[in-house]
Length: 188
Ligand code: ZN
Image (cartoon, rainbow, N blue to C red; front, side):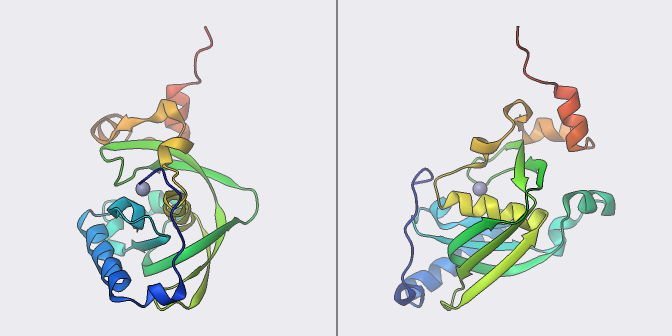
C-alpha cells in the first residue's frame, strides 16, 4: 500500500460519510501519534487524501533559534484531496525528518524550500497553498506518500539513525554539524 500510487477521489465521493469519517479518524490518529501530517495510504486507504496540522504545542521544547532554523510556524488543521504540487524557485533545505510509517528512525532529507499546492478541501472546494520552510516540507512528505514515495527514498543515507540514538548523539547538532561529523562516503 505505501508503495502504490493512490487514486484520485471524485467530487461526489468526497461528500460521502465514508470519506468524512475517514478524515475524522485520520485527524484523531495524527493527533494521537502525535504527528504533523498523515496520508490515507498510511491507514490502509489508497486514495489521494492527506491531513496536516502543526499546532503550537508541537513546538514545545524547541528554542526560537531552532524554530527559525527550520522556518517552522504553526499550521492549522486542514485536508488536501487530489493535490498537485509544483516547486517554486530552486532553493533546497535539509533537515532531520521522520515518518509514522517508518517509526523509530530519523534521517536528514533534502526538500524544496518553497512549493505551491493546488487541491480540493474536505468540501470539494478548490484550495491553493503556497508554503515555505517546515510547512513546505510537510506538504512534500505527505504528497510523496500518495505517489508511493517514502522519506527514506530521499534521505542522505549516512544520516539514518534510530530516534533514540539521534537524541543521544545529535540532539543539539545542526544539520551542517551532523553532516560534517558523519563525513562523506569513503571511496576506498
Ligand atoms: Zn510519512
